[in-house]
Length: 62
Image 1 (cartoon, rainbow, N blue to C red):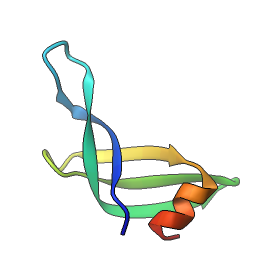
Image 2 (cartoon, one colour):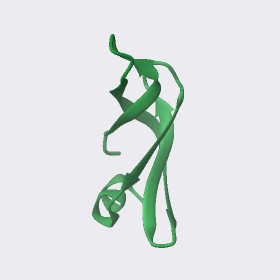
Image 3 (cartoon, rainbow, N blue to C red):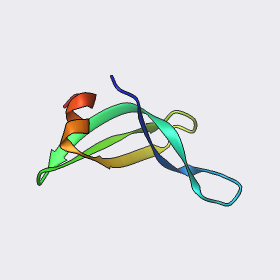
Image 4 (tube, helix red, strand yellow):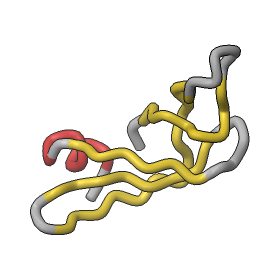
């Protein structure tokens, strides 16, 4: 399965901005012709969400 990076709202840097982390346990879904990926953060195990294109969703494995 392809590796997806997304913003994690729990993992913050020194300036209190979300950081890019690797997403685990990815589940791709489609609703109203929009694709999204849900998963957990590799570092803190928090929930993550990312909108994606149809092409990217097919690469990850819909």
